[in-house]
Amino acid sequence: MADTYNYYTYNYYYDDAVVSGPPLGPDGIPPVDHTTFADVRERLARQALEPDATTLADTYFDEAVKAFEAGNYAMAVAKFAGAMELAPDDVILPFAYCQALFASEKYTEAAEVLRAALARVSPEKEGVFYPRGLYTEDAVLFEQIDRLAEKAELYSFDGDLQLLLGYHLLGIGETDAAVEPLRLANQDLENASSAAVLLSLAEKMRIQNTEEVDK
Image 1 (cartoon, helix red, strand yellow):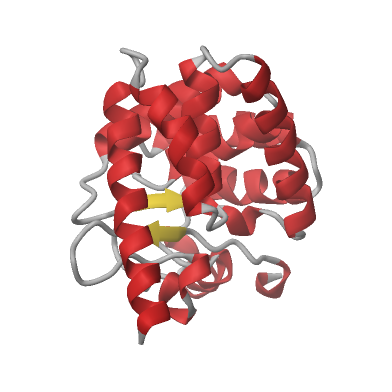
Image 2 (cartoon, helix red, strand yellow):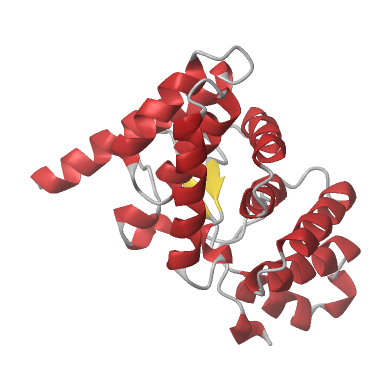
């Protein structure tokens, strides 16, 4: 069963040492530790070795991943929400929950969860997470981002849409394209602080990409 899953949580750090993520090479997958995990297969393997340690939150999480992979985003939303209630200190779950809401085209709710998630993490420590690996095919993710982009273009005044679009463009490595929607979100009072976090991240990623090209 463990080989069924391919859920990587990409972690973008703010410190000067590394800004990691899928477009930046093999170091984009953070190690598994007490605050995060890189791969559901690793988590399931640990549960198989220590079945007594498996919690109801773990079960909900695993069910959410299965539902997401099957395209049952409503079920994934419900299961991730249940896992969050049972594990309120988990800094990864809100980003996965946000992804499920986004996939369900519940953009306002997704932006609300994203703001809360960004407010909870310490960028220099945990980083900003983007659960791209929930998708078995990138084409599905890109299609969903295209739909969001179309709506964000129609409603450029909607800070929620702009924040969400900027976050997703960063997540797929479209750093330059992410800047404009994040700037628009930064003009919105409710989204300003979250947009500022992601704009700072975008600049760090841009600098690192430039440095790697120059090597």
